[in-house]
Image 1 (cartoon, each protein chain N blue to C red):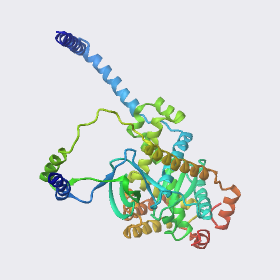
Image 2 (cartoon, chains in turn green, orange):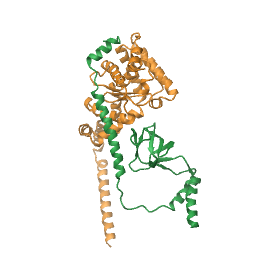
Image 3 (cartoon, rainbow over the protein chains, first blue to last red):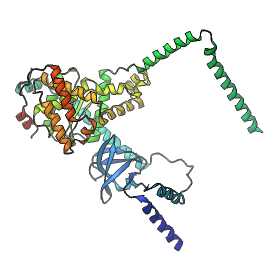
Image 4 (cartoon, helix red, strand yellow):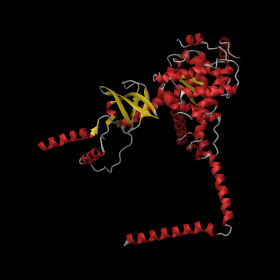
Length: 164
Length: 290
């Protein structure tokens, strides 16, 4: 029993001694949608791929506000807490080496069994993404439908005393 | 025993293939007319190289098709501001008037407002142009709004994104494949959309931005707006950058001070007439509920 407690103690103490605290990344295999507000029905700002580095700004219960860099552009939004994983980043090279050795103690041999790329949650995310894309395509169609008539343009020029 | 035999056979095959390769390579060198043949080969290689470097043409129709998809990506990133259809109609009127006096008047241009307070504007290929709500609330009159739209229209008339795409490695895959991609879609077309979207979000070449500024100045003058509005917009952008409301624009565009400097040089060369005083501040305030 004592051994179990020592082991559990080590499990918590070693990473916390060796790691810096503020590195996070996207965990789910299919990535996650970054939303405008902390609600599941909120507008999708961007789809974040798996393993993407994120900075956590605020935490509100099960929703975290994060900041990401996409194409050199800084974007902020909300994601479910469950989609964020902590990255164990070593403070120094020695700490990194110690940490690797420590985690190797618990590492299992890689499974030979193939895993399905998309699970039910994955399909759900894909469907959401597809829905967001569909909405954008509809918006472009709406743009194309919005035509200004020649008469309206002519009146506009005349009213503004612009060159005919 | 089987393993040893298999190793021996594979060793024999490899050795003979290698020897065959050397003999082929050595043929040209040992040939008496080698130098002449080599010259011809070099020419052929150069011709092939030039052919590969030739830009694959993208028709207006294909450009619109590409632009439609890129516009959808822009909307999916920011969302469209549909709360104020009057303002959207208003920017469509201004944009259409300017576009009709641009270098590509026959293209159908479409304008919309993006749902973000960041000060910026985007021009997708094929005439899909966006300004942000932040920009709409930053400019002070119709001439300034026209200046921002004219700059974006210039990106379309000069086909800046299309040219960036044509020069990309992606389009070196071959004319037939590119044509098929536009006709049938597929993975290559998706990559083209991604490439064009990246160009849009990461920023165009500095020279393209200066070029668009210069063209915008001329377009404003063609319509009859006070073209000094172009300088005023750039001054506004500089101010907005300082207060952190135009971060993306600051990252993707040259410094506004440098743009103003370049534009002054253009003004000297273009020999434009004296500027009008048409700013239409009252109409702008009325139409944008400002």
